[in-house]
Length: 363
Image (cartoon, rainbow, N blue to C red; front, side, top):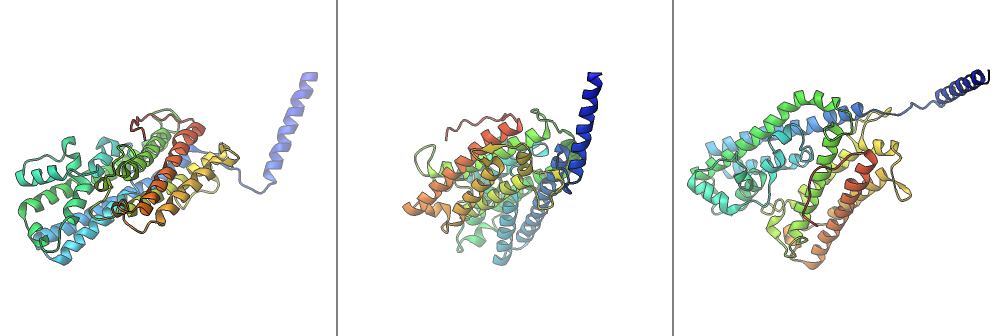
């Protein structure tokens, strides 16, 4: 008899709580990993690769026009198309899983510093294979940065009417286009597989996504700032920045940081009734850092890094020559290092994700 009364009491309590929830007038937010993965796939990742694909086609078209007939105006169009493509890449670099992993897209497109000696040797000999890893440092965006911007007005026409140079440029652009085309096209079918793997294990989509996001941020901190600054080797290396010849290093990092911020907050059209972005996911997990919500701490740190970058008016390569400007880059690096700890330790721990990539740079 006592047991029956207890059961009745529990049922009545559950009914009362249910009615109380309904009367709040607020939709109940649910943690729905499929909704989160769908949001990122459809509204961030696939559109990013689509934009990269379109800009790759534009560069290919502009170069075809330059190869047909040289003019300074056409040459500048090639430069602009290349800059647009490389800017677009900053919003794709963190998605190095799935189709991008198949073709090692990050290494294939953006291994820097570029090997100028190998580039010159390849052009002169005409004997090379850009599909091999041996030429990662002699192709992609860094090689184009060198070839298109390390030239003066007096020799520009002679260089860009040279058949060997034109052939090498064409091969680089075709290699970029081939890899970008593959990833963009594969995502059309990989998308369903991506949103279906909703676990937290090493093979789950969330794990792959988070690992590549954190890895890319750490690579940006090290390769785009720390290594040229001399953090690892003590000697500054001005030409080890991402775009030393076009002097666009800080601009590219700015786009990259904006992409990381969007990865945290999700695209603009988030579903307000569901937890469909990382910021809300961390809030639902009640993850904290000190007395603050971890999601807010990470976002604040990213915004601080972007703010520090926006205060720099001199290109990174030139900044290393001036002590006050070099100090600004050092502060930027320190701030990015603090974000790495938040992402690689606090965030993944809260989410129950295991970091499975290796980083042995020691900086």
